Image 1 (cartoon, rainbow, N blue to C red):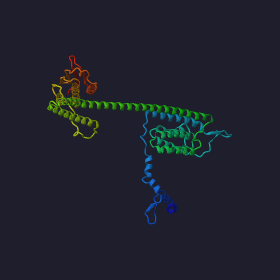
Image 2 (tube, one colour):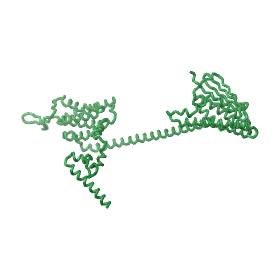
Image 3 (spheres, one colour):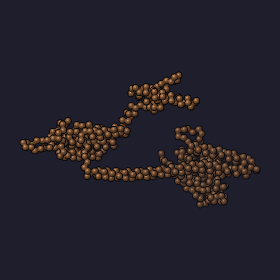
Image 4 (cartoon, rainbow, N blue to C red):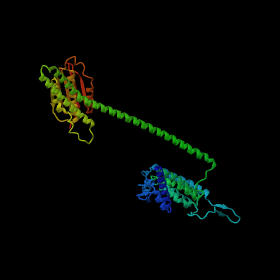
Length: 482
């Protein structure tokens, strides 16, 4: 029952649609209204329903007039003729004019028939021409000048010149040579319109119109082709097209290789940038973590040794470990904030300021608490330096003291900060500790990172053992003289 009812409903809908089409097809407007779904019908007891909802949805929201006007707009910038192009166009016009004049003297000259009484001129029998021209040396050339004149502006106004040549054709249809010249000019201007005109749709529509015009204008508009020239007209364009295809393929291969090389260079640049970024992150993490963790390890070891004998000293050492851990976490948050910062967002409330040379006193105090005596000496006129220079100087002293704590147990350290007129000199020396622990000064990664950091500001780093024992690290950073 349900299937029968569905089929009945479907049959009713189809028959209703067909009936509506037949009923509304009595006039052209009715057909359009039915096809576009503008007509509505009302079922019994139901709301109004469109006759052709699918077609109506296709046409909904579309303005044919606006689309037509949009297709007639220029699709690109107007052409920019060059001096060479203008000279070439003038040369083409002059050559066609000369050839047409020579052809006109042979083809369109009146034919004479010698009679018994007197010579008389016999013409072709065609009606009086629409534009009669004078006999003599000025009639044909002047008319041909008017025909070839649009070629001079075929690059600047390609579509207008094509229409001009097409408009002149009916007026010169009575003169075979001039009409043939007009056809040649139409070929040239049609090519120009297809290549140079920004009005793509009108230019393409003008081509079949021009072909129809010249086939209907006169029998001699399109020149006849001799049989012996047909092979040349077939083979020469094929050869030219093949050579053009070869050149196009070679140019396409060159462009493809260039794009491939550019893609490889881009990938190499991305890899280099990623490696530099990883090196920068590793350098920052090394500078932040190594010092704090080294001090914490030494303090924790000292607390473990004196925990049973002197609990007060163990408590102080553990407090130092806690303070070092907090400082390390603060600097880690700062580094991570720099790495994940979004431009335009203000994260200053969550980030602590970057270390500078003013914090060397606190750094020396933490190293002293770890059991390494440190002497801090500042010479010269102390002043505020660029933040990058301040941070680089702080990292140099931090790395040198960290190496002293890790690799020269029991040594004494001395830090000299010299504010020069045009340079900042930092020197960290130690007296050398236990021979067993002073044999190796790490893997050199920290010093390498310092060299890269100083290289950004044109600075230099020198590190190595002292002649009388111990180790020396010296950094020199040039300063801009105000």
